[in-house]
Image (tube, rainbow, N blue to C red; front, side, top):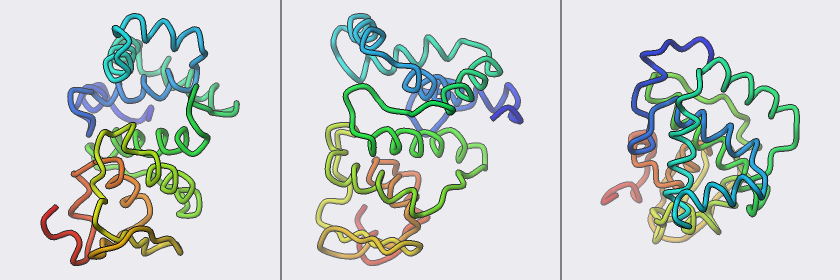
Length: 185
């Protein structure tokens, strides 16, 4: 993260309307979140979860990137858990948003496929609530780097992280996926 320059940190991420620094801020906010800070964010966002998360990320996104990186480094030494969410959802948040930030600037997220599986299972079953979409509906997803598949219908094949991004409704990942189920997406 720290190797990127200001131009990259102010570039658009895969999250509509968010800069890369806002995505980093969102990860920091999630890692440091408590019930109290969650309540404050919800109050500020008019009890609309999406607005609350977006506003908190943009506010914290104005913090200098080195400070955000330091805060995330400190948080990485503790157990990460999103308040009110399953453990798999916290992992999904970190993996998806890391790709949201790094892929637009030509970098990738290095993660073992076995580490993606719990996040993929969580988003498969509960992701609609978070991403407000079910892009995988009517398709069978098959990981090419892991013994993992779910669903029925025309197959969509890809690396586990790419499938996670697809289930998280990141349409930017479609060129990385293959199979007859990709048609019509």
